[in-house]
Length: 86
Image 1 (tube, rainbow, N blue to C red):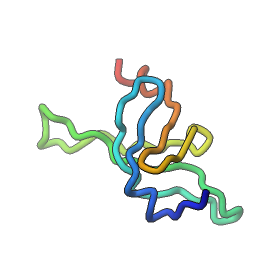
Image 2: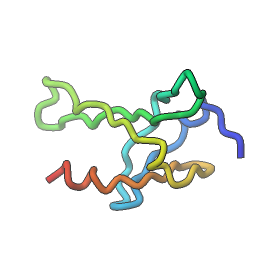
Image 3: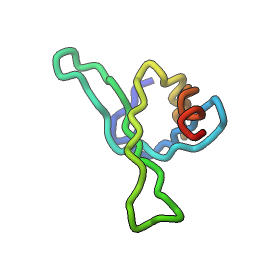
Image 4: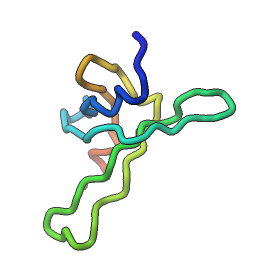
């Protein structure tokens, strides 16, 4: 299946570990020497109780953590995301 970078922006990113929606891809980190994708970049969550102070840092999802790119979703395996929340 051939997927364009612009099409990735339309897909939900979901962590298969806990089923949590992480957001949408806003950028792709590419190794210019090899042409391989290094990571998908997803915006960090907004802080609901302190909206004045911005949002959490962006999430870089290493390409090796991408499990499946489907028609309407990208499934990733991020067990570390649960540990960071605690």
